[in-house]
Length: 268
Image (cartoon, rainbow, N blue to C red):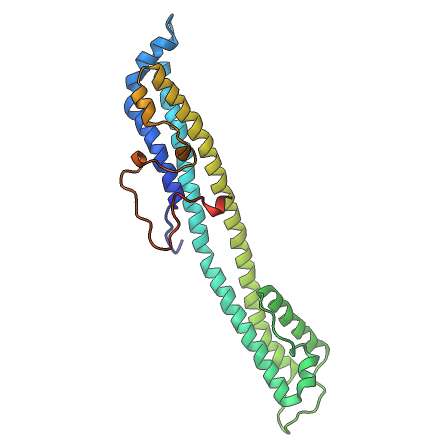
């Protein structure tokens, strides 16, 4: 990809919220496993390594959900950056076709008068949407092919053949057609990457709440309310927004940049 993309603030916030839980599990999970195992299996003979594996598996589940959030977010950002080049090519091709059509309007008007301009569909204002402009250009070419210029020139010795006008008009039509196709392809790809991003966010929310509530309860069962309180799934955290303790050094929001505490409009 020509340009690098960066993680969105909302995705970064979700990762910060995730880290609070997974770091706690990595540091304290093994410490509470034995005490927790004794309460879960007071009569034995289940081995304590099963409880250790269960705690590690819970943390791993949330880690994977967070990784997918990160990868999907970066992929969507990169896809949006990729859209810039084909859109610029579309705009350039649009401008070139407009200039060609206007130039032919002036030429026909100067050599043959307004009636000839109208006969080839060039008297009306050119449409702004690129798709409609492309259709107009093709319609003009079709009229050139259907009816060669029959009017007498207003100035002796100066004429123009419709074949020459077609040769001039077809290249910018082809350029705009190809550029529009590329834009449509990029739009479809951006839609797919947006869907992946939304699915990752939804999956993360389910995993975050399930895993965090599980650890919250396990900490309480192990007699570590202090650890449970540190990872409590508050309303902000469930929404993917960090509490102060999740992000000790929050990045200042630059002027004009979306506030990470605001909902992501692309996920509505």
